[in-house]
Image (cartoon, rainbow over all chains, first blue to last red):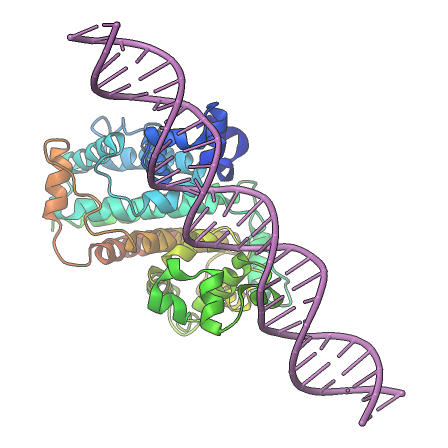
Length: 189
Length: 189
DNA sequence: AGGGTAAATGAACGTTATTCATATCGCCTC
DNA sequence: GAGGCGATATGAATAACGTTCATTTACCCT
């Protein structure tokens, strides 16, 4: 984790890690099966930073909101992990399992039907992980000559504020939560 | 593109591409600067598959819906590209720029204010790209021993149907669109 | 005292993307 | 038709990378 924080994610190589530990690269393989497994350990560790404490303590939508914020902020700092975690089974990552258990229990207690809970979680998580990747994008990603795309150039210029990725995330999260409340209220019939 | 389709994405190596073309690997560098640039060409080509034709022809929310479907389906087939496109400036990818121009113009014509259009697009796109990555995940990604996480195990079992990733995407997209309509209707004051 | 286990080592391998000096081919101009 | 130039192909080479393996070292427990 220290190596990633100091030198950046690309610097996390087996050789660099070994050097950091004052050890030969091959020695690492007495403790970890592969680099992929190492990344899974890191992912499970990062997931400990995610705050699920509002589930059970507050209404489901507020809990979902603070969870989403915490989740996005954690992976905005470790965005190269996103493609890994998106396709990796969670069994074997205890903190990850514990997180999902808390989220699922919170939604169930909030009144969501069992057969929609996973889809709701996956949908929200897809948005979160997409936003975390977007947070790693350069600020000028949409810059384009106005001769080529006049409308686009104009609306990009109309965007105000400094942290553009965060603003888009906030708008999107508010939108998702509003939509989920609509759906939830329509459940009763 | 043929190489990816037949052998899978991991098989797209500079050496394999050269062999496919009946040429030495080093010869490729007379035509492309790096593998990253090659991926950007592929991305721009994939973006041609995305259907934007409803923008301008139908209401903004319906256009956004068909665009999102088309976008997700395209990148569900090329999910390893997602982390690349999420952080790459669009200038220099003509079809990509044209796509965003059409989306931006459609939202503006639909009545969205200039200063929210980019955030709306980025938010929807984050959800789409997250969903595209999720589509590449194994079906049993959430399988977990029920002793470890009883609620989670139960709601995972309660999920019905075959294409789980698609179901989550449909639920999420409907949710996002509902939330956007709420926000749009609240604009007038 | 000795055996077994955990951990470290250096050398090696195969796979990447990428660079470079050199060579070939074909077209345009004189 | 000769000469040259630009575009392209080539093979050899390099630097990372993850990973394997046989071997040694160190230490704890009996």
